[in-house]
Length: 409
View 1: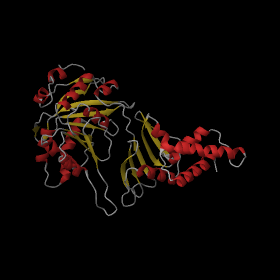
View 2: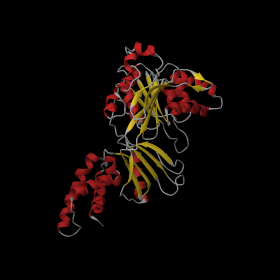
View 3: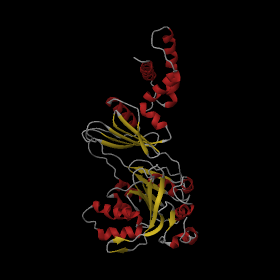
View 4: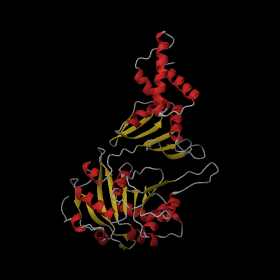
């Protein structure tokens, strides 16, 4: 047995005898104590010699209190995502680019790591519930899929929330959008417009929601609704809610639709829906149409596709919901769509900002171009203007100054 394995076994036994929690602040001193005792025995030839004590301490701490060989990728600020296709196929993404890691695990090790990841979330994974979304202690989002839903091995995806931006100024510094577009979006949120953020997976929708929310006034009360907690709103008055799985008896499930309805009873000034995917879009539209400002994100290929999807998803709520109700509701209560893109090199950028003037024609919602990317990749001012100019005026904002004339930003 190698030295690290012996030290790990002795450290686990010592933790159990002392009745300690395997937390990071207690682990290293305890492991160093075990290593010191081990070194004394290795001097007499009773056990193999430890060549690098510090490396062994870090490795054993990761195995016991962390997540084994995956811990180094969780600790690496450059790694944005980690996924396990099989024990011998473990990938990570850096700056939007995927790479195969040299890590090789066993099926039992993958299961053990996942079980440790799920401990703090209170969510379960078994044959009756073969996939799970959960929040990890560091704020990363965990998604796991097990056989027979997956072909042979456990499929694991860990989405780290690498927050490089907290407001529009940070996004400008990162090159995601221009100062003029940033000022306009800040003004739109401050004026109370309803904004949808669209884009592909990994395009930065959650980060954009956080940055948009930074413009919300300090006296406003915000309620967030998410599948799993991901948003990090740095505001004074925020209440966050997330969904819940059904229990072993199949009861106790809390859906996004239920959370949207509950949010309206909590005296919100704003609601933020982390992502709309299904029938909860209907409840969100009804809430926004009642005069309650809000933000939300949606997966889509363009701003136009996002609007089309918002006109389609509410139909999943039931046969009594028709497009004759949904389409004009979308046109009247969604004000802006901010579409994001991720470049081949991994950089995230605002691709277009579109406005919904509130009109429809033959069942199609009209869209006005506020900003768009030109052929050379620069963000340009379009021909359109947002709805509700009076809201900007009430908020003390000069819409004409924010948008200026039609010229390159």
